[in-house]
Length: 481
Ligand SMILES: Nc1ncnc2c1ncn2[C@@H]1O[C@H](COP(=O)(O)OP(=O)(O)OP(=O)(O)O)[C@@H](O)[C@H]1O
Ligand SMILES: [Mg+2]
Image (cartoon, rainbow, N blue to C red; front, side, top):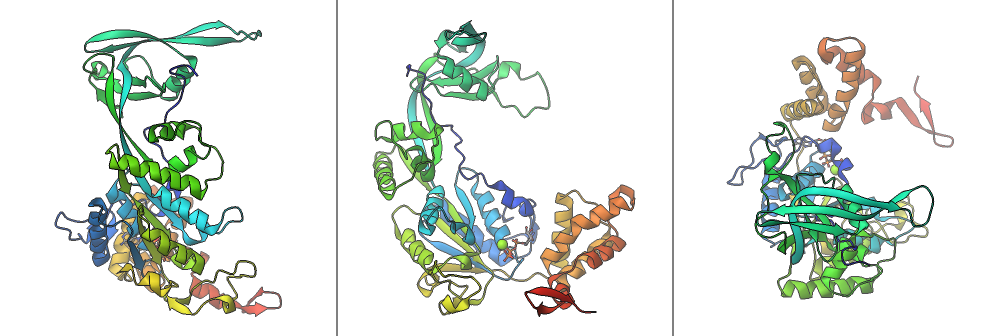
């Protein structure tokens, strides 16, 4: 490998990219707390549920102060009372630099991976590491970018890039570099063009686009572009680089170690994810190196949040494991959520286990959680919403989805929400808006008629159960005449 032909980790390694689950909560922008920690009744998309929001605010403060690791919080309350929304708000309050790993209890059951293994993996996705490195870099504004082509040495019609000529300009001078073709790919990936400020790591050849040189700042007014000044000093220099990764990133990157055993070469592996087994031994080894680098002040631990929704889906074995993992030295904050009251704990008998066969389950316990774990939880209750609160939530949601709803229709939906459930009310919004458009309402404005029609078209669970007369024969539905 040539001196600059290697690869390094992207500064924004993202292993928790699971945004799609939050679509139902896209109107939630945070906990909506004032600086004194009190909750506004309607702020950041959050309506009511003030006590729980304030409690979550304290949890956020504890996480920020790093006083929370190894502890667990349980959000407990009925369906549709905003537990998942609260967890999403916590993640937003923490920002993108603190890892947040959301899973659903049932996710750990898979034929391929052991339950405890799946849990451990998610634990490590929720623990971040901030590494400060001093790197030898070439940094400057790109004033020349020319790939040099040659005939393909293997014959054929194609031409290949043999070198990349790049000129970088800094405050104190310019430097012309002749680089390995592999760097050209990195340059293309970062979409570097003339006039951008970039740096190239001397040891690994990793390219990072810093922004656009502010000499070009007047080009366009409306642009999501970050303008940066031409770098000070020489082009070739030492620069402190901060990188955020999770322990899971390191596990994956080092599942088949190729370089040395120091953190930097572990990081260097990050760009080449492979599907290799991550063993307990590897994790111990990584922990050891990480601890060493933390002691030396090179790296800093950033405990994040592991959010386990529908926690009653875990079984006894997983709960025991959770208990133990919480006690380990490096542990994230665990937030659990459950809408169950007193239910049996799932047993661990996997071979004959059936979720519908309660005889295999253990005795009932609050939220389906064993008492030893319950004892160490901070429990935050969520309460049912009042009809006016539901009205405000529906209004917020309609605005986020860009739907026009008349005031009378909103009152009607809120009333339905109070009688049936918040979820039902929210779910009626989209189909009602389709109806309004089909029937040619002005501006697609949803009126009371559309809501009434939707109420007839889409049953709520209560009415649906009435329609079904009960199980007949082999589980068929029988309609009551
Ligand atoms: N206080 C609130 N303000 C604004 N939106 C809310 C509020 N509470 C809930 N919502 C919204 O209502 C919907 C249902 O809430 P959520 O999914 O958080 O309920 P949950 O308590 O997790 O229910 P379940 O126990 O069924 O999982 C979501 O779209 C959520 O964003
Ligand atoms: Mg939920």
